[in-house]
Image (tube, rainbow, N blue to C red; front, side, top):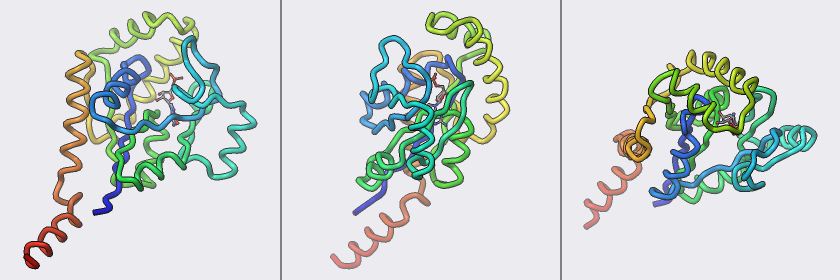
Length: 205
Ligand code: 5GP
């Protein structure tokens, strides 16, 4: 049966470790991962086309104009967007696609794809969040403070998510995320075509 893949949106506070969680989900469970475009500068070790497609503001604007994004948003001082083609192609192939995006983008996706699974990853506490951000060593004090402020904003939007998962132990968190995805995909309402088909087959045998 030509079943379309699911869209899985993973958000979380900056520093909650969602990047690592997502990487593990891809490795361990074989999800497709959408690589976003951004206007922010690459961090040390980041590779164009792997972590992000790094774009100038003009190029990013161009992509917006040509409907190249499923969604895009401004986060702190930069733009981030989800390229449309990869996501649509993967879903059409029946592959489940993970988008690791912030809250505004998640809302936008939910409007266009009501069946998308929205998962929010959080650190166990606000203190541990700040510690993780500082411990990363890649961010200036000013940026850390901006991101903590942004986290306060993001905490107001948690209500829009279907699942909240605490990232205390990485492996447990990864398995929990996979479980909720499997759970959502297994809902009867998400398998109507399959039910129809197996009933038909049974009658034909
Ligand atoms: P960072 O600069 O730390 O890589 O990402 C900053 C924030 O932007 C994170 O919350 C990340 O999830 C979000 N983000 C990354 N790509 C996209 C995207 O394509 N769209 C949206 N809306 N947010 C994104």
